[in-house]
Length: 234
Image (spheres, rainbow, N blue to C red):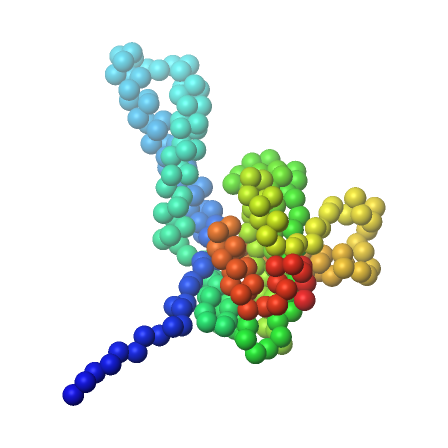
């Protein structure tokens, strides 16, 4: 009796987590930061008391300022663990001939082999950003997918250092501030109106991916959709 093994040539599905910095992670990060501030301040207070042998008096303010400064990098070191422990429940699954947007309420499957997939891809520069993990000059790169009654909006924040090489590989429509295009008024027609409608949908229900995962999703789509890299829309 002989046996034979069948080796599948189909790639295994790849799951890309979406919205890593959702509200629970942000609240958890804030709470963690406050706890670290209290711990660092308390430790510094004890050390000063041991060194001075008395109450720290007016030194409380520089001690608090030091605790605030030290807590920032410490909280950022722990933040990735919060992202890992508190998933958003949204993800993009890349499968053979398909892309699936997984939501808590269900999923939207995009058939990349048989059915026509409409897409719009655009970017704009981040401006008037004061602080946080996204800086002024970074890009928001996004894509909207529509097939039948299914739709999904994916996006990522691309740093200024990555922007040039990223835009060189994929064609994106540039959304400029309204003040530079239509004197502050929403356009009534043309491609700008279409992409601004897509941007509003992204703002409302879009799923954020890590830059590397967003690139992976685009690579997956480019392998199945004709002229995907060179055209910002289908």
